[in-house]
Structures are given as structure tokens and as C-alpha cells.
Length: 19
Image (tube, rainbow, N blue to C red; front, top):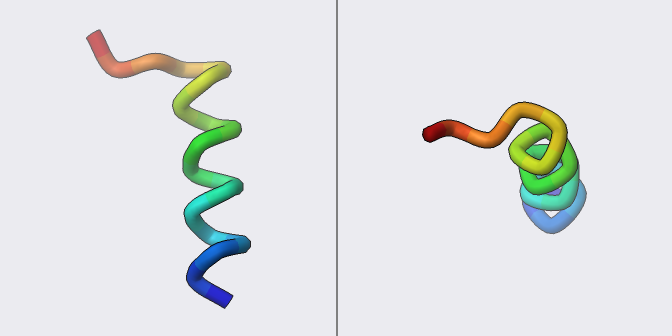
């Protein structure tokens, strides 16, 4: 389940990268 969350977080990070 954590893999899915991590994947979503990665997708969000790609759309909204934290500078």
C-alpha cells in the first residue's frame, strides 16, 4: 500500500516540485 502512496507522492511532486 505504501508503494501506491509513494507513487502518488512522486506524481504530485512532478506536478508541483518543491523548490
